[in-house]
Length: 159
Image (cartoon, rainbow, N blue to C red; front, side):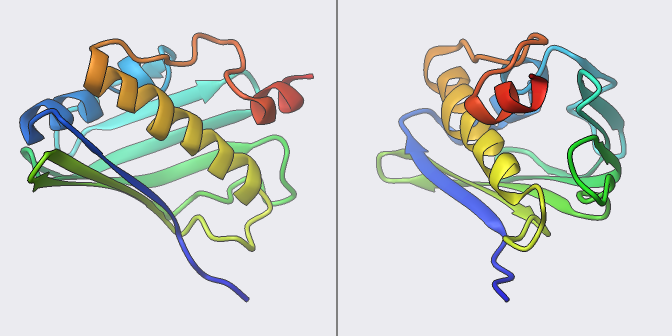
C-alpha cells in the first residue's frame, strides 16, 4: 500500500511575505464560501461546496512568511463511503526563499492514495493550489470557487 501524502510545489518570483499573504486569503483562491477567520492562529473556519463537501478547519500554526498549518477538525463528503475521510488530516504550506523568488510546498498530510477521494481531491488541490493560489500570488487575482465547479472532478460530482 502506498502511503505517500499528496504534495505539490512551485517557485514564484514574489517574496515570502507575498506568498504568505496569498495563502491566508483563502476566499481569494479556494472558495468565496468560507466562514470564519483564515489568517489567525487558533481560529477555525468552515468551507463548503454545495452538499458535496463541507469541512471545519483549525489553524494550528502560522509562522509569518514561513509556514501555515491547518488541521481538519470535521469533514463531510457525499461521494465517499467514509464521509469523514479528511477528518484528522493536516494541510501544510511551507514557504522558502529561493534564488529566483519563493518556493511554496503544499502537502496534505493524510491524503493518501488508498483514500476513496484521493483522485478527486488531488485533482481539486491541483486546481486550487497550482492554478488559483498561484494566480493569486503572481497576478493578484485567484480563481476561487463561487458555487460552480472549477474542474472535471467537481463537475462530475455536481451532476
